[in-house]
Amino acid sequence: MIFLETDSDPTEWLLMPLKWDSSDERQDWAQKNADMLWRLREKRPKRREIRALAKRLDMLAEGIPGRVPAHQVFLYAPDPRRVPLAFFAVTVPAEGDRLAQLREAVQADRDSPVRPTEVDSFTTERLGEGLRSLRYWGSREGALMMSLNFAWRSEQFGIDLSVRTVADDPGWLAAHLDEVDVFARSLWLTSAAEDTPPA
Image 1 (tube, rainbow, N blue to C red):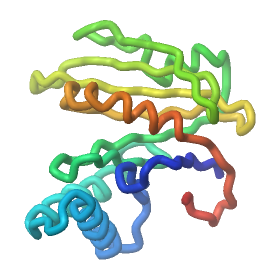
Image 2 (image 1 turned 45 degrees about the vertical axis):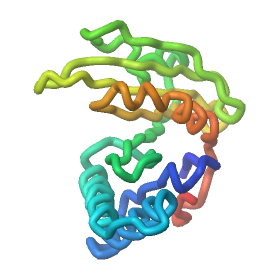
Image 3 (image 1 turned 90 degrees about the vertical axis):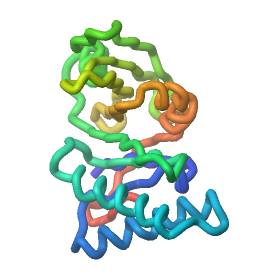
Image 4 (image 1 turned 135 degrees about the vertical axis):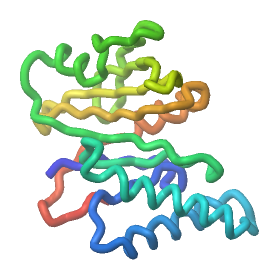
């Protein structure tokens, strides 16, 4: 199996498990991470604040697996007062023209009625040359939505990798693009045995 690794700050970028043995295990994970995130921000956080964040984390951990296509999920949590933003990583076998497949992965030619999709080359030391895009559209409720998409082809592993997030607060995501780009540049691929979980 191929796994995506990062050496970004693990207290801001949480690797969320996609399989749980029980709801108690999932809720324990959510509680421990909520407590950690708040205690890194404040010496004496309020219990209700920790409980609120734990509930948000638990909802993400329960709701994402099986519903959103992803082989790995990272939660960006720089502020415990906000719902962490999920980044979904997917790998598929590398087939066809490299540029065409990467453009499809970053939704470069998908309808973007609010404003044209912004597509740029995005090269990292570890993953090589890829693409990065920002796409905007309106939700059914009329809210402005934005997706941030990255894609690379790994000749070494014979796969195409995409990393994507969707935000209902484009202004907040836009203000954190530099931090997200640093995260993307920290990523690399590694192989592991079938029974070895990702680090």
